[in-house]
Amino acid sequence: MFLSTEGGRNLSLDSILMGLPMSDPTAWATAMNNLGMAPMGMTGQPLLPDFDPALGMMTGIPPINPMMPGLGIVPPPIPPDMPAVKEIIHCKSCTLFPPNPHLPPPATRERPPGCKTVFVGGLPENGTEQIIMEVFEQCGEVIAIRKSKKNFCHIRFAEEFMVDKALYLSGYRIRLGSSTDKKDTGRLHVDFAQARDDLYEWECKQRMLAREERHRRRLAEERFRPPSPVVAEKLKDDTKFSEAIQTLLTWIERGEVNRRTANNFYSMIQSANSHIRRLVNEKAAHEKEMEEAKEKFKLALSGILVQFEQIVAVYHSASKQKAWDHFTKAQRKNISVWCKQAEEIRNIHNDELMGIRREEEMEMSDEEIEDPSEMKETEESALVSQVEALKEENDSLRWQLDAYRNEVELLKQEQGKASRDEDTTKEQQMKLLQQALQGMQKHLLKVQEEYKKREAELEKVKEDKLKIETLLENLKEQESNTSRVCACSQEKEYPVEKTLSNSPVKSEREVLLVGIISTFLHVHPFGASIEYICSYLQRLDSKICTAEVEVLMTRLQNTFRQELSGVGASLEKRWKFCGFDGLKMT
Image (cartoon, rainbow, N blue to C red):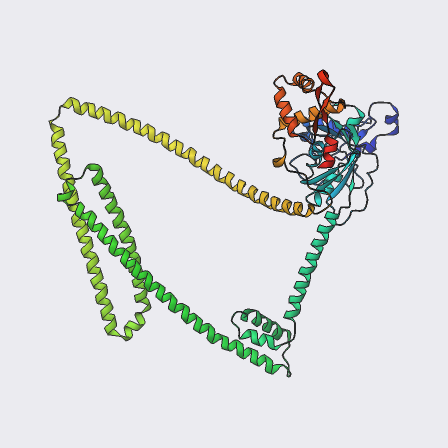
């Protein structure tokens, strides 16, 4: 986080000589700002003129650090008159302490073209690739880490701008955990590194840009090239006509027409004129196809209407008293609902067909005026169709009336039976009905509330789905980019690390066990028995068993090796750490 520390320059010499614990005014100002208090100098003047107490840690808002996970920002350029105060960075396994802000910035070499790799020196002796990944993955996606046996490594990022974020950590002091041992501390030095992979990718990108530029120049030259007989031949070809006519237009607007080339231009204009006839013929063919499609649609629609009429007739015949009395109430209800649905669909299709016929009649109105005989025939056909439609409606209404009469008779019979029952049963039935209605009303209210909740949840799910789709698209793009980078890097000097899916270590707990066992065996260079190792591990976690540890160590053959020591009765199996030799073999 960058803070304005102009007040640091206001400290007088007298205040410095007083011996107070304020040797670093910028650190003092940062600490006071984090506490939400306006930092003051020894002379009573504010160290931060633009201090805002709402930004302190006392309000629950920690100071923003550009290297915090999730921000993904590059620190802004620092004005020359403003010193930068870097904050402490806390990671899971280590802590990074900022350098003295009064020291000059760390020196860096000239940036190579297309640089995506950095050199990191000053690492702790006990630093592992996991700790390096934990520190530098905050700068961006790490493609590969090449660690040396000495205290340095090379890190390759996915993009160039991530290198600028990594350079921000140069000068920081790193401490592993809370240890103060020299092997667990170091001062980071981050610098640009020249890698053949980066240079090759940069050269490929430059060659691609050069090819695109040559292609654009070639297209421009072809457009501004003087008239040639090739363009006249393209004007006669339907597939290349649009490109050729654009070239001809450019030449004419540029003023290429003169006495010498007038005949050539006239022949090309004549070819363009002949193309008009081809376009007219093509349009007529398309209109003919459209008319044929309309006729097919009209015939298919009329056939569908005929089938609808037959289905509706079946429903109406079933509604007559001869067949209606034999159906149950549920069956009658279903038949009546189906009949209504079929009639509605039939009416919709019938209106659509009548609309098509009206459009055709309006289009042919001029021809009908010229031919009165045809007009009479169309009028007669329209009248006949209207009469048929009226007959169908009359039949449907008559069938509906018969159905209503049957329902009325059934109701009368039911009422007659109900009147014979006692009054007590009526009251009981009324009470039961009222209770059922009240229960239904309550249930309906609950269902409405649940429906509203489900609608709100559905909207939230839709929003989450949209967010997930966008994230998936971004992940697919990143996977495609990483796959390309990995394919290129496999051909180079250093191989890409194995993914976690091929690793014999299957959980974070096994990773911790491997680290603890490796540290324990590294301290015992002559090896240790499995019982000795498990006794040490059971001090940390009593649930650890000997079989689990032995299976884990046998899976990692490149890290641990079992050897036999002693003779006769003193023969003993000992496990040794061989991770450094295994690293060379892999």
